[in-house]
Length: 188
Image (cartoon, rainbow, N blue to C red; front, side):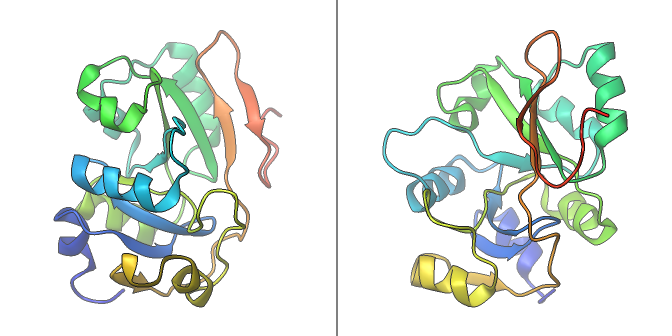
């Protein structure tokens, strides 16, 4: 990883980098301005779907006022760390800029130690796949550059992740609901 990426992200920069799954376009989840810019770069106008937030450890959920039931904790212990993104309730108005009109947020605790170490230093990162909505995810830095050009000022090449988007599971209701299967069998 090139020197300077951590302070760049901590100070509200937007970067394209490899995650545990696919290349992502990332920004600090703590920066309203960076998150707004990322929505403008990545999403169609009017879309309300929140981005997935990468976290370095389970206890990071406290920062977002996310309540965990005993059942949720048991489920998360089975799938994290790993390529499973989980939608959890978050009613705190403090995070409206992340929730985008919903009362939920999505999180993933990635498995690779290098990525969790980075997240511990940058803080949680919003990390949608590196593509404009409706286009296929970038598989290389070159493809990401073709999508975002000079609108992103930091492109960080890295080892390939799985190449598949994460599984997506909602823990908002009584039982887990798989919204996207990913490459892993979640509800074994």
